[in-house]
Amino acid sequence: MILEHALLPVVPGREADFEAAFAEAKSIIAGMPGFIGLRLSRSIETPNEYLLLVEWESVEAHETGFRGSPEYGRWRELLHRFYEPFPVVEHFAEVARAE
Image 1: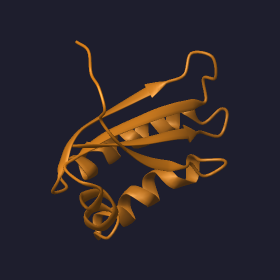
Image 2: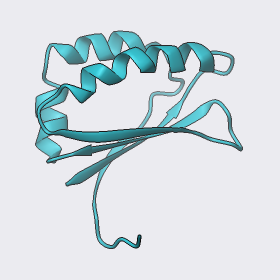
Image 3: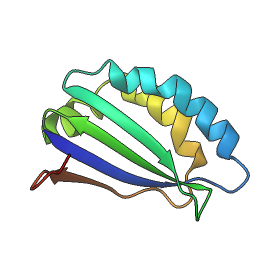
């Protein structure tokens, strides 16, 4: 499993619109091959910043499968207009876990 990490800096004042658009967009990503799950959290200290964590079976499922799919165009249309600046996305492999 790979964890995609993205800090999403939403234009201040557009948070409610972003959350509504994300509610629609999450079904797009959830239907992609290799998708395992996602979590979207909002910063307490910086209310216009969100943390998106997406679990994928592999980096390829995200980079090639999702980003190379026709559905990614709709994802981009729904969400990319809210970011300033555009988020940096990174992938992580688990090293340790405590429950």
